[in-house]
Image 1 (cartoon, rainbow, N blue to C red):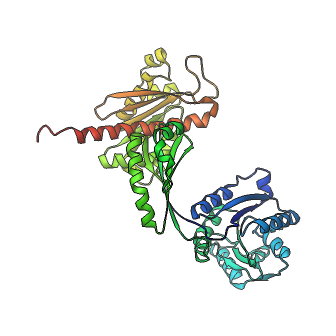
Image 2 (image 1 turned 180 degrees about the vertical axis):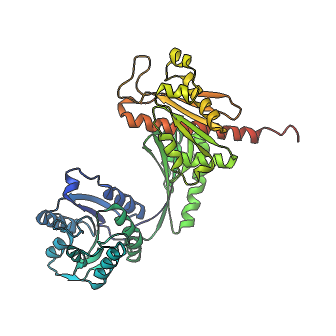
Image 3 (image 1 turned 45 degrees about the vertical axis):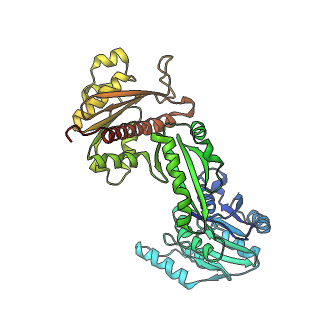
Length: 438
């Protein structure tokens, strides 16, 4: 990830999200999160965020405060054709400037509606009205354009629609290049994220403690959705120079973390595991109980997964475990469905059924009900069948208080990690063992 540092524009940026639906909690404010991350990546200081409803008076009150403390105001929402879409009208009124119709915007709106076989509703003409002096911020995905506007010498305003997909495209295609051209960003910063599974943030931080005191690059620990992460960030005059600072630290950290570090940046466990299976030209099947298909979903999210993933069985009911996976009813009677023996039998059963090299199984108690004193909510067994038709299982006790989806999420990712580690250990053994026939 490449980011940049702001110059003397020390007042920084402010994000203002317009929409009563945000205040009511009907919509998650993902736009604020996106822009916050992007500003951090660009190195532009960002000290304030505001959410305001569709009310002209309150929007103007927010603008008055924001314009006194920030030099870059980023608005999302309120650009649509309906009467409650008030952002541009209110901004123009606040700065005492008229709205001006832009024929090129109207033509673009008409072309987009025509391409969908529809006529342009009269209300959409409103979206061609921009404050006098404002530059068009094109919307390649929707009807509502935004603006890049300097109503005062020290103030830049950008407006975006509330639809996240449209806003993000406009930000990346037009807003970021504009900010770079205007001198908001100068020195390059590059970040590399190391992603770990099977180790807590605190344990990881303790393991790499000497590196957390570095100044350039810096190393910072994070935790998210069961993962522990290390972000390495370097500042330099060029991208290549920043990478040169990062690379030796990255190598050292990966060595320190060993198998706990599974990937970098946007890599997922499913993608990393898929790459290993492709490298070995081996196949995988899954048998799931408590995750209900979640493991298969993660695997098939990866493009090209059909080359190594054959399929899976959701054996939620015990009779399905018996009928499709060949689990011996006596194992269910003696040990219960949530047990090491059944996890192993499920893995071997789906391996045989779908004729794969490897197979994973998951059986557990996701909750909130169903737990007992001996088998509490959060108890999960992961099974793994190997190419030589042997199998093993591991036991996990996930934090039940985090909820059902938390247990299911950790179970599916834990299964991916289980096979990943097994593959890597096998590859390492093959490398370290001399060829007896050489």
